[in-house]
Length: 598
Image (cartoon, rainbow, N blue to C red; front, side, top):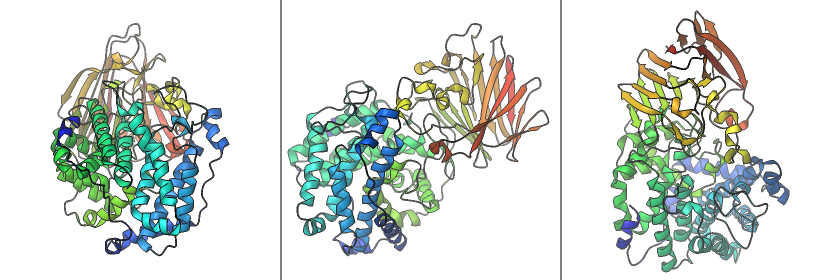
C-alpha cells in the first residue's frame, strides 16, 4: 500500500511543521485560555522538581531483579519534564524556563543510552545485554521517542536555545543523528519489517517518531529524507500486513494508541511531505477500519472492552483520534473523540496509567492546537452498534443498558493472554464481569515464563477449567465453528485447550437482550467443570445465585455449586483499574450450564 506510492514522491520533501514555532507569538497567544493555563501549570510543577537521577545501578536493577518500573519512571519523568517546560516557555515566552529546559536537554543528551534496559538486545526475542553499547546505538520505542522529543524542541525553540546556550542545538542535532538518523539508515532493527515476519505496535510507533526526527531537524539532506521515506513505507506495509481488512487491533484498545494512532501519525507526516503520494491512503477502507476500531470497542465513559495486556481504562479519546477521524471521514469517531475530550480532566495524560503517554511533545501540541475545534464539535457521541471482527475474533453487542464483549479468536495474538472464548460484561456503563488485564511489566512478562503469571492464565478469565487443566498459548489454540447471530455469538472452545481425555467439545453460546445476558455452556466432558467468573463487585448469595452490590444478579440453573474467593489487588498497574479486592466466582457443573445475568 505504502511502497506502491513511492514513484509519486515530489522532487523536494519539505520539512514537517507540527505547529507554529514559539517565535510566532500570535498563534501561541490565540490558544484557548484553558489550554494556555494547563500548559503553564504543568511547566510550573515540573520547574519545582529536580531532574530524576539515572545511575548505573538503576539500569542494572532490571538485569539483577527483572524489575522495570524504577528505570522507566526515571526516564519517563525526564522526558515528561522537558515536554512540560517547553510548552510553558512557548506559552509565556519570557525565558523563565530556558535554564531548566537546557539542563533537561543536557541530561538526556548525556544518557549513555535512550533505550530501556528491557529492550537492550539487537536480535528479536533474545536475552537483554547487561549494558548498552554506546558505540552501537539501538533504536527501540523510547530511543525513537527521545529523538522525536529533542527534534520537536529544536523546532519550537531552536533559535532561543542557541542564543542563550551557544552550541546546544548543535548537540541536539549530533545526538539525534548519531542515535537515530544514522542507525536507521545503516542498520536493520527487527521492528522495521522483514518479509512475512510478524510486526506489532513497535513498527508504526517507532516509524512515526523516526520520521519526526528526519522531518523536523534542519541538517537533514534530501537524500536522507528520501531514504527514510522508502524505509518507512516498507515498514508500514509490514505493519499493515498483520491487520485484517476489518482493521481490528489484536493488542487491544490501550495499544491502539500506540498502533493505530501512530499509523495515523506516520501517514500524517508522510502526507505533509508528499501529499499526492500519501494523502489518498486515508481513503483506503482498511485505514478507516483501523481508525474506527476504538469507537467499536468503547463501552461508556472511560471503559473499553479489553483483552490481553489491555486495561479496561484504556484512556479517553482526544486530538489524535479526532484528527484521524477527520482524515478518514468518520463522523462517529470524531464525535466520540470530541465528546471524550470535553469530559477529560487530564487531556495531556499527565496522570495516565501508561507513563509513556506523557512523553511525546507532539501529542501535547496537537491537543493544544486542536482544542477549540474539539470543544465546538457539534455532534454528540452515539454508542456503536454490534461489531464482529473475524480477523481477531472480537465481538461486541449492545442492548439497552447491557454491553457484551467476547474474544473468540486464538491464543496467538500480540500481548496475548490465554483467553479464547472469554467474555466481558458491562451494565449501565459499569463493569459486571471483568477481564483483569496485566500486572506491571517485569522481565518475566515478555519471556518464556510469561504464562506462569496468573493474570495470563485462562483460569483467571471468564472461562472453564477441566480438573486443573487450562488453555495453552499459540495460534493453534483457537475457537472453531464460530457463529454470529443478532446480539449473540457461539463457538467451540475445546481447541483452545491441550488434549484432555474425554473432552471432545465445549460449546459456548452467549447473547444479549435489553433484559440481560444469557450464557449457555455445553460439553461432553464426563468430569466436573469449574467455570470461573471475575468481578470487581463483592458477590453476595441471593436465592440460588449471586447479587453484585445492587448492579445485577448472576443466576445459574439448579444443581450448580458456587464458591466465592476474594483476590487482593496489590500491583500498582492493576490498582489503576480495580479496587484493592476483586472476586473470583467458581461454578461447578456437569455437561450443561445456563447462566442468566440480569
